[in-house]
Image 1 (tube, rainbow, N blue to C red):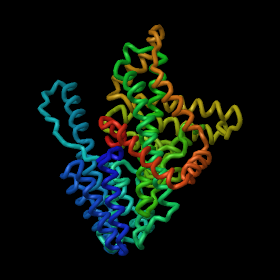
Image 2: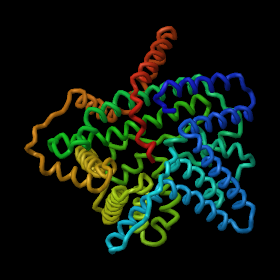
Image 3: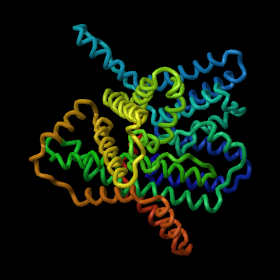
Image 4: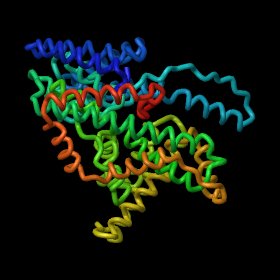
Amino acid sequence: MSFTSLHFYVFLLAILALLSVIDSNRQKKAILLLASYWFYMSWDWRFGGLLLLMTVVNFYCGRQIRFSAQPKLWLSLSLVFSLGVLGLFKYFNFFLDNLSSIAALLGMASHINILQILLPVGISFYTFQALSYTIDIYRRELEPVNALADFALFVSFFPQLVAGPIVRASYFLPQLTQMQRATAVEQRDGVLLIIRGLIKKVLLADVLALHLVDPAFANYQQQSSWLLILGLIGYSFQVYLDFSAYTDIARGCARLLGYQLPVNFNRPYLADTISNFWQRWHISMSSFFRDYLYYGLGGSKKGNVYVNLLITFVAIGVWHGAGWNFVLYGLCHGLLVALERWLREKGWLVQQTGWRWALAVGRTFMLVCLLRVMFRAEDLQQAGGYLLAIWQNTAVPFQLTAVGATALLLAVLLHGIAPRYLEQWQLRLYNWPLLVKAPALLVLLYGLIVFASAEAPFIYFQF
Protein backbone atom coordinates (compact mmCIF):
# COMPACT_ATOMS: atom_id res chain seq x y z
CA MET A 1 0.00 0.00 0.00
CA SER A 2 2.10 2.85 -1.33
CA PHE A 3 1.81 6.50 -0.26
CA THR A 4 1.14 7.33 -3.91
CA SER A 5 -1.84 4.99 -4.25
CA LEU A 6 -5.50 5.87 -3.93
CA HIS A 7 -5.95 2.85 -1.64
CA PHE A 8 -3.67 4.42 0.96
CA TYR A 9 -5.65 7.66 1.17
CA VAL A 10 -8.94 5.77 1.44
CA PHE A 11 -7.27 3.82 4.26
CA LEU A 12 -6.05 7.05 5.92
CA LEU A 13 -9.45 8.77 5.64
CA ALA A 14 -11.17 5.71 7.14
CA ILE A 15 -8.80 5.81 10.14
CA LEU A 16 -9.31 9.56 10.61
CA ALA A 17 -13.08 9.14 10.43
CA LEU A 18 -13.01 6.36 13.00
CA LEU A 19 -10.73 8.28 15.35
CA SER A 20 -12.96 11.35 15.15
CA VAL A 21 -15.63 9.55 17.19
CA ILE A 22 -13.19 8.05 19.72
CA ASP A 23 -12.54 9.82 23.02
CA SER A 24 -10.39 7.18 24.70
CA ASN A 25 -6.62 7.24 24.25
CA ARG A 26 -6.51 3.49 24.82
CA GLN A 27 -9.02 2.89 22.02
CA LYS A 28 -7.19 5.26 19.71
CA LYS A 29 -3.89 3.44 20.23
CA ALA A 30 -5.58 0.08 19.69
CA ILE A 31 -7.06 1.25 16.38
CA LEU A 32 -3.73 2.66 15.23
CA LEU A 33 -1.91 -0.54 16.20
CA LEU A 34 -4.33 -2.69 14.21
CA ALA A 35 -4.17 -0.26 11.29
CA SER A 36 -0.37 -0.31 11.36
CA TYR A 37 -0.22 -4.09 11.20
CA TRP A 38 -2.83 -4.11 8.43
CA PHE A 39 -0.73 -1.59 6.51
CA TYR A 40 2.48 -3.59 6.92
CA MET A 41 0.89 -6.94 6.14
CA SER A 42 -0.62 -5.50 2.96
CA TRP A 43 2.89 -5.81 1.49
CA ASP A 44 3.15 -9.46 2.56
CA TRP A 45 1.16 -11.06 5.38
CA ARG A 46 4.26 -12.93 6.59
CA PHE A 47 5.96 -9.65 7.50
CA GLY A 48 3.53 -9.20 10.40
CA GLY A 49 4.95 -12.16 12.30
CA LEU A 50 8.50 -10.87 12.03
CA LEU A 51 7.44 -7.39 13.19
CA LEU A 52 5.60 -8.89 16.16
CA LEU A 53 8.59 -11.06 17.11
CA MET A 54 10.95 -8.08 16.93
CA THR A 55 8.56 -6.15 19.17
CA VAL A 56 8.03 -8.81 21.83
CA VAL A 57 11.73 -9.71 22.18
CA ASN A 58 12.89 -6.11 22.56
CA PHE A 59 10.02 -5.21 24.90
CA TYR A 60 10.93 -8.08 27.20
CA CYS A 61 14.66 -7.33 26.96
CA GLY A 62 13.97 -3.70 27.84
CA ARG A 63 12.23 -4.68 31.06
CA GLN A 64 14.96 -7.12 31.98
CA ILE A 65 17.67 -4.53 31.33
CA ARG A 66 15.99 -2.21 33.81
CA PHE A 67 14.99 -4.65 36.54
CA SER A 68 17.37 -7.63 36.35
CA ALA A 69 20.83 -7.95 37.90
CA GLN A 70 22.43 -8.58 34.49
CA PRO A 71 21.47 -5.65 32.26
CA LYS A 72 24.44 -6.13 29.93
CA LEU A 73 23.37 -9.72 29.21
CA TRP A 74 19.88 -8.64 28.20
CA LEU A 75 21.18 -5.75 26.10
CA SER A 76 23.48 -8.23 24.35
CA LEU A 77 20.50 -10.49 23.70
CA SER A 78 18.56 -7.57 22.22
CA LEU A 79 21.49 -6.59 19.98
CA VAL A 80 22.27 -10.14 18.87
CA PHE A 81 18.65 -10.98 18.11
CA SER A 82 17.76 -7.72 16.32
CA LEU A 83 20.96 -7.39 14.31
CA GLY A 84 20.96 -11.15 13.69
CA VAL A 85 17.49 -11.01 12.14
CA LEU A 86 18.52 -7.99 10.07
CA GLY A 87 21.70 -9.76 8.99
CA LEU A 88 19.86 -12.94 8.02
CA PHE A 89 17.38 -11.21 5.75
CA LYS A 90 19.61 -8.48 4.36
CA TYR A 91 23.21 -9.74 4.36
CA PHE A 92 23.25 -13.54 4.55
CA ASN A 93 23.21 -14.10 0.79
CA PHE A 94 25.93 -11.46 0.35
CA PHE A 95 28.05 -13.42 2.84
CA LEU A 96 27.39 -16.73 1.06
CA ASP A 97 28.17 -15.23 -2.34
CA ASN A 98 31.53 -13.88 -1.14
CA LEU A 99 32.32 -17.16 0.60
CA SER A 100 31.69 -18.96 -2.67
CA SER A 101 33.96 -16.51 -4.54
CA ILE A 102 36.77 -17.03 -2.02
CA ALA A 103 36.42 -20.81 -2.37
CA ALA A 104 36.64 -20.50 -6.16
CA LEU A 105 39.81 -18.37 -5.90
CA LEU A 106 41.39 -21.07 -3.73
CA GLY A 107 40.53 -23.71 -6.31
CA MET A 108 37.93 -25.35 -4.12
CA ALA A 109 34.62 -26.62 -5.43
CA SER A 110 31.76 -24.58 -4.06
CA HIS A 111 28.33 -26.07 -3.46
CA ILE A 112 26.92 -23.12 -1.56
CA ASN A 113 23.36 -22.38 -2.58
CA ILE A 114 21.97 -18.86 -2.35
CA LEU A 115 18.85 -18.81 -0.22
CA GLN A 116 15.63 -17.40 -1.64
CA ILE A 117 14.94 -14.94 1.17
CA LEU A 118 12.37 -12.19 0.72
CA LEU A 119 13.66 -8.94 2.23
CA PRO A 120 10.94 -7.53 4.53
CA VAL A 121 10.24 -3.95 3.56
CA GLY A 122 11.43 -1.41 6.13
CA ILE A 123 13.29 -3.94 8.29
CA SER A 124 16.34 -1.66 8.70
CA PHE A 125 14.16 1.16 10.00
CA TYR A 126 12.11 -0.67 12.61
CA THR A 127 15.12 -2.70 13.76
CA PHE A 128 16.94 0.51 14.66
CA GLN A 129 13.85 1.93 16.34
CA ALA A 130 13.54 -1.13 18.55
CA LEU A 131 17.25 -0.95 19.41
CA SER A 132 17.00 2.71 20.39
CA TYR A 133 14.58 1.57 23.12
CA THR A 134 16.79 -1.09 24.72
CA ILE A 135 20.01 0.92 24.40
CA ASP A 136 18.44 4.03 25.96
CA ILE A 137 17.13 1.94 28.86
CA TYR A 138 20.61 0.47 29.37
CA ARG A 139 22.07 3.99 29.41
CA ARG A 140 19.46 5.05 32.00
CA GLU A 141 18.10 7.63 29.57
CA LEU A 142 14.66 6.02 29.33
CA GLU A 143 12.31 4.03 31.55
CA PRO A 144 10.66 0.92 30.05
CA VAL A 145 6.98 1.23 29.18
CA ASN A 146 4.50 -0.91 31.08
CA ALA A 147 2.21 -1.70 28.15
CA LEU A 148 3.37 -3.97 25.33
CA ALA A 149 0.74 -2.33 23.11
CA ASP A 150 2.38 1.08 23.46
CA PHE A 151 5.77 -0.29 22.50
CA ALA A 152 4.20 -2.23 19.63
CA LEU A 153 2.61 0.96 18.29
CA PHE A 154 5.93 2.78 18.55
CA VAL A 155 7.71 0.10 16.49
CA SER A 156 4.94 -0.33 13.91
CA PHE A 157 3.45 3.20 13.56
CA PHE A 158 2.46 3.03 9.90
CA PRO A 159 3.33 6.54 8.59
CA GLN A 160 7.06 5.98 9.12
CA LEU A 161 7.25 2.20 9.35
CA VAL A 162 8.50 1.45 5.83
CA ALA A 163 11.05 4.21 5.15
CA GLY A 164 11.44 6.35 8.23
CA PRO A 165 12.33 8.73 9.59
CA ILE A 166 13.94 6.57 12.28
CA VAL A 167 12.09 7.65 15.41
CA ARG A 168 13.65 7.10 18.81
CA ALA A 169 11.69 5.69 21.70
CA SER A 170 12.47 8.73 23.86
CA TYR A 171 10.90 10.96 21.19
CA PHE A 172 7.72 9.04 20.37
CA LEU A 173 6.69 7.05 23.45
CA PRO A 174 5.92 10.18 25.56
CA GLN A 175 3.42 11.21 22.87
CA LEU A 176 1.40 8.06 23.60
CA THR A 177 0.77 8.88 27.25
CA GLN A 178 -2.27 11.04 26.62
CA MET A 179 -4.94 11.57 24.01
CA GLN A 180 -3.57 13.46 21.03
CA ARG A 181 -5.92 15.29 18.67
CA ALA A 182 -4.73 17.35 15.74
CA THR A 183 -5.55 21.04 15.99
CA ALA A 184 -6.82 22.97 12.96
CA VAL A 185 -3.31 24.29 12.35
CA GLU A 186 -1.83 20.78 12.57
CA GLN A 187 -4.46 19.48 10.16
CA ARG A 188 -3.58 22.26 7.72
CA ASP A 189 0.13 21.54 8.05
CA GLY A 190 -0.48 17.81 7.63
CA VAL A 191 -2.40 18.23 4.40
CA LEU A 192 0.20 20.62 2.98
CA LEU A 193 3.04 18.26 3.90
CA ILE A 194 1.28 15.40 2.08
CA ILE A 195 0.70 17.51 -1.03
CA ARG A 196 4.28 18.79 -0.96
CA GLY A 197 5.56 15.23 -0.70
CA LEU A 198 3.42 14.04 -3.61
CA ILE A 199 4.61 16.92 -5.79
CA LYS A 200 8.24 16.06 -5.01
CA LYS A 201 7.71 12.38 -5.73
CA VAL A 202 5.33 12.39 -8.70
CA LEU A 203 6.19 15.57 -10.59
CA LEU A 204 9.93 15.75 -9.94
CA ALA A 205 11.63 12.57 -8.65
CA ASP A 206 9.78 10.13 -10.93
CA VAL A 207 10.11 12.44 -13.95
CA LEU A 208 13.85 12.80 -13.35
CA ALA A 209 14.15 9.03 -13.17
CA LEU A 210 12.19 8.44 -16.37
CA HIS A 211 13.70 11.17 -18.54
CA LEU A 212 17.27 11.47 -17.27
CA VAL A 213 18.59 9.06 -14.65
CA ASP A 214 17.32 5.69 -15.90
CA PRO A 215 18.36 6.32 -19.55
CA ALA A 216 21.82 7.44 -18.40
CA PHE A 217 22.49 4.36 -16.24
CA ALA A 218 20.74 1.83 -18.49
CA ASN A 219 22.85 2.67 -21.54
CA TYR A 220 25.88 4.50 -20.17
CA GLN A 221 28.32 3.02 -22.69
CA GLN A 222 26.62 4.92 -25.54
CA GLN A 223 25.75 8.16 -23.72
CA SER A 224 27.71 11.39 -23.89
CA SER A 225 29.94 12.47 -21.02
CA TRP A 226 27.76 15.50 -20.34
CA LEU A 227 24.58 13.42 -20.14
CA LEU A 228 26.28 10.99 -17.76
CA ILE A 229 27.38 13.88 -15.55
CA LEU A 230 23.86 15.29 -15.58
CA GLY A 231 22.63 11.76 -14.85
CA LEU A 232 24.62 11.74 -11.61
CA ILE A 233 23.38 15.21 -10.69
CA GLY A 234 19.85 14.18 -11.60
CA TYR A 235 20.09 11.03 -9.50
CA SER A 236 21.33 13.05 -6.53
CA PHE A 237 18.23 15.21 -6.76
CA GLN A 238 16.00 12.22 -7.51
CA VAL A 239 17.04 10.32 -4.39
CA TYR A 240 16.71 13.47 -2.28
CA LEU A 241 13.28 14.40 -3.64
CA ASP A 242 12.07 10.79 -3.47
CA PHE A 243 13.17 10.20 0.12
CA SER A 244 12.24 13.63 1.45
CA ALA A 245 8.86 13.19 -0.25
CA TYR A 246 8.24 10.03 1.77
CA THR A 247 9.30 11.85 4.93
CA ASP A 248 6.97 14.77 4.16
CA ILE A 249 4.02 12.44 3.61
CA ALA A 250 4.87 10.44 6.75
CA ARG A 251 5.09 13.60 8.85
CA GLY A 252 1.87 14.91 7.32
CA CYS A 253 -0.04 11.71 8.09
CA ALA A 254 1.33 11.62 11.65
CA ARG A 255 0.31 15.25 12.16
CA LEU A 256 -3.24 14.51 11.02
CA LEU A 257 -3.31 11.72 13.61
CA GLY A 258 -2.12 14.10 16.33
CA TYR A 259 1.54 13.06 16.54
CA GLN A 260 4.87 14.59 15.56
CA LEU A 261 7.71 13.00 13.61
CA PRO A 262 11.19 14.56 13.39
CA VAL A 263 12.50 16.57 10.46
CA ASN A 264 14.79 14.38 8.36
CA PHE A 265 16.37 16.77 5.83
CA ASN A 266 17.74 20.30 5.88
CA ARG A 267 18.63 21.26 2.28
CA PRO A 268 21.61 18.87 2.20
CA TYR A 269 23.03 20.08 -1.10
CA LEU A 270 23.79 23.46 0.42
CA ALA A 271 26.34 21.83 2.75
CA ASP A 272 29.82 23.33 2.52
CA THR A 273 31.62 20.19 3.77
CA ILE A 274 30.94 16.45 3.68
CA SER A 275 30.61 16.55 7.48
CA ASN A 276 27.95 19.23 7.14
CA PHE A 277 26.23 17.18 4.45
CA TRP A 278 25.71 14.32 6.91
CA GLN A 279 24.31 16.78 9.44
CA ARG A 280 21.67 17.71 6.86
CA TRP A 281 21.02 14.41 5.06
CA HIS A 282 18.78 11.65 6.51
CA ILE A 283 19.25 13.25 9.91
CA SER A 284 17.47 10.53 11.87
CA MET A 285 19.78 7.84 10.46
CA SER A 286 23.07 9.76 10.61
CA SER A 287 22.37 10.93 14.17
CA PHE A 288 21.50 7.33 15.15
CA PHE A 289 24.90 6.07 13.97
CA ARG A 290 26.60 9.03 15.63
CA ASP A 291 24.95 8.52 19.03
CA TYR A 292 24.82 4.73 19.19
CA LEU A 293 27.86 3.58 17.19
CA TYR A 294 30.39 6.43 16.93
CA TYR A 295 30.00 7.50 20.57
CA GLY A 296 29.77 3.85 21.58
CA LEU A 297 33.17 3.23 19.99
CA GLY A 298 34.56 6.14 21.97
CA GLY A 299 33.99 9.04 19.57
CA SER A 300 36.83 11.51 19.86
CA LYS A 301 37.56 10.65 23.51
CA LYS A 302 38.48 6.95 23.40
CA GLY A 303 40.49 5.03 20.86
CA ASN A 304 41.49 6.51 17.52
CA VAL A 305 38.90 9.05 16.38
CA TYR A 306 39.71 8.46 12.70
CA VAL A 307 39.25 4.71 13.02
CA ASN A 308 35.96 5.33 14.84
CA LEU A 309 34.83 7.59 11.99
CA LEU A 310 35.75 5.04 9.33
CA ILE A 311 33.94 2.21 11.14
CA THR A 312 30.86 4.38 11.55
CA PHE A 313 30.70 5.42 7.91
CA VAL A 314 31.35 1.93 6.59
CA ALA A 315 28.42 0.82 8.78
CA ILE A 316 26.31 3.62 7.27
CA GLY A 317 27.24 2.40 3.80
CA VAL A 318 26.45 -1.23 4.59
CA TRP A 319 23.15 -0.20 6.23
CA HIS A 320 22.03 0.97 2.79
CA GLY A 321 22.65 -2.35 1.08
CA ALA A 322 24.55 -5.63 0.88
CA GLY A 323 27.23 -4.98 -1.70
CA TRP A 324 30.84 -3.89 -2.01
CA ASN A 325 29.68 -0.72 -3.71
CA PHE A 326 27.94 0.27 -0.46
CA VAL A 327 31.04 -0.64 1.56
CA LEU A 328 33.15 1.60 -0.67
CA TYR A 329 30.49 4.32 -0.58
CA GLY A 330 30.66 4.46 3.22
CA LEU A 331 34.46 4.18 3.26
CA CYS A 332 34.88 7.13 0.87
CA HIS A 333 32.58 9.32 2.91
CA GLY A 334 34.38 8.26 6.09
CA LEU A 335 37.75 9.14 4.60
CA LEU A 336 36.50 12.57 3.51
CA VAL A 337 34.99 13.32 6.93
CA ALA A 338 38.20 12.15 8.63
CA LEU A 339 40.26 14.36 6.29
CA GLU A 340 38.05 17.36 7.06
CA ARG A 341 38.44 16.73 10.78
CA TRP A 342 42.25 16.61 10.43
CA LEU A 343 42.28 19.82 8.36
CA ARG A 344 40.01 21.52 10.89
CA GLU A 345 42.32 20.56 13.76
CA LYS A 346 45.26 22.01 11.83
CA GLY A 347 43.33 25.24 11.32
CA TRP A 348 43.29 24.79 7.54
CA LEU A 349 39.53 24.29 7.22
CA VAL A 350 37.49 27.22 8.51
CA GLN A 351 33.96 28.51 8.01
CA GLN A 352 33.66 30.37 4.71
CA THR A 353 31.38 33.20 3.63
CA GLY A 354 30.46 34.86 0.36
CA TRP A 355 31.93 33.46 -2.84
CA ARG A 356 34.28 31.16 -0.90
CA TRP A 357 31.24 29.56 0.73
CA ALA A 358 29.63 29.15 -2.71
CA LEU A 359 32.78 27.43 -3.99
CA ALA A 360 32.81 25.14 -0.93
CA VAL A 361 29.15 24.23 -1.53
CA GLY A 362 29.86 23.50 -5.20
CA ARG A 363 32.87 21.35 -4.34
CA THR A 364 30.94 19.38 -1.72
CA PHE A 365 27.97 18.89 -4.04
CA MET A 366 30.14 17.52 -6.84
CA LEU A 367 31.85 15.10 -4.43
CA VAL A 368 28.46 13.90 -3.20
CA CYS A 369 27.24 13.46 -6.79
CA LEU A 370 30.39 11.60 -7.81
CA LEU A 371 30.05 9.15 -4.93
CA ARG A 372 26.37 8.62 -5.73
CA VAL A 373 27.43 6.39 -8.61
CA MET A 374 28.17 3.64 -6.07
CA PHE A 375 24.77 4.23 -4.49
CA ARG A 376 22.92 3.91 -7.80
CA ALA A 377 24.99 1.25 -9.58
CA GLU A 378 24.16 -2.41 -9.06
CA ASP A 379 27.78 -3.28 -8.28
CA LEU A 380 31.33 -1.96 -8.43
CA GLN A 381 31.75 -3.08 -12.03
CA GLN A 382 28.84 -0.94 -13.21
CA ALA A 383 30.00 1.99 -11.05
CA GLY A 384 33.49 1.80 -12.57
CA GLY A 385 32.09 1.45 -16.07
CA TYR A 386 29.91 4.52 -15.61
CA LEU A 387 32.83 6.67 -14.43
CA LEU A 388 35.02 5.35 -17.25
CA ALA A 389 32.31 6.26 -19.78
CA ILE A 390 32.29 9.84 -18.46
CA TRP A 391 36.02 9.99 -19.18
CA GLN A 392 35.86 8.34 -22.63
CA ASN A 393 32.58 9.50 -24.19
CA THR A 394 33.48 13.15 -24.71
CA ALA A 395 32.91 12.87 -28.48
CA VAL A 396 29.43 11.31 -28.21
CA PRO A 397 26.65 13.77 -29.16
CA PHE A 398 24.83 15.25 -26.16
CA GLN A 399 21.08 14.63 -26.03
CA LEU A 400 18.72 15.62 -23.23
CA THR A 401 14.94 15.76 -23.40
CA ALA A 402 13.20 19.04 -22.60
CA VAL A 403 11.18 17.29 -19.91
CA GLY A 404 14.32 15.98 -18.19
CA ALA A 405 16.04 19.36 -18.35
CA THR A 406 12.96 21.14 -16.97
CA ALA A 407 12.58 18.66 -14.11
CA LEU A 408 16.25 19.05 -13.17
CA LEU A 409 16.03 22.85 -13.24
CA LEU A 410 12.88 22.83 -11.09
CA ALA A 411 14.53 20.43 -8.64
CA VAL A 412 17.52 22.76 -8.26
CA LEU A 413 15.28 25.81 -7.80
CA LEU A 414 13.04 24.05 -5.26
CA HIS A 415 16.05 22.95 -3.24
CA GLY A 416 17.54 26.46 -3.24
CA ILE A 417 14.41 28.31 -2.14
CA ALA A 418 14.51 29.29 1.53
CA PRO A 419 11.92 27.35 3.57
CA ARG A 420 10.28 30.53 4.82
CA TYR A 421 9.24 31.44 1.26
CA LEU A 422 7.69 28.00 0.71
CA GLU A 423 5.82 28.33 3.99
CA GLN A 424 4.52 31.76 2.95
CA TRP A 425 3.22 30.39 -0.37
CA GLN A 426 1.61 27.44 1.41
CA LEU A 427 -0.06 29.79 3.88
CA ARG A 428 -1.44 31.93 1.06
CA LEU A 429 -2.86 28.81 -0.56
CA TYR A 430 -4.48 27.72 2.68
CA ASN A 431 -5.96 31.18 3.26
CA TRP A 432 -8.03 30.95 0.10
CA PRO A 433 -11.83 30.86 0.68
CA LEU A 434 -12.98 27.41 1.74
CA LEU A 435 -15.25 26.99 -1.31
CA VAL A 436 -12.22 27.54 -3.56
CA LYS A 437 -9.54 25.89 -1.42
CA ALA A 438 -11.24 22.58 -0.65
CA PRO A 439 -12.08 21.61 -4.27
CA ALA A 440 -8.64 22.82 -5.45
CA LEU A 441 -6.80 20.71 -2.86
CA LEU A 442 -8.95 17.65 -3.60
CA VAL A 443 -8.42 17.97 -7.35
CA LEU A 444 -4.67 18.47 -6.85
CA LEU A 445 -4.38 15.52 -4.47
CA TYR A 446 -6.43 13.24 -6.71
CA GLY A 447 -4.52 14.31 -9.81
CA LEU A 448 -1.17 13.59 -8.18
CA ILE A 449 -2.32 10.14 -7.06
CA VAL A 450 -3.72 9.27 -10.49
CA PHE A 451 -0.61 10.58 -12.24
CA ALA A 452 1.68 8.55 -9.96
CA SER A 453 3.38 5.55 -11.50
CA ALA A 454 2.79 2.21 -9.82
CA GLU A 455 6.18 1.11 -11.19
CA ALA A 456 8.11 3.81 -9.28
CA PRO A 457 8.27 2.77 -5.62
CA PHE A 458 10.10 4.94 -3.13
CA ILE A 459 13.86 4.35 -3.42
CA TYR A 460 14.41 3.72 0.28
CA PHE A 461 11.93 0.83 0.32
CA GLN A 462 14.86 -1.40 -0.67
CA PHE A 463 16.72 -0.45 2.53
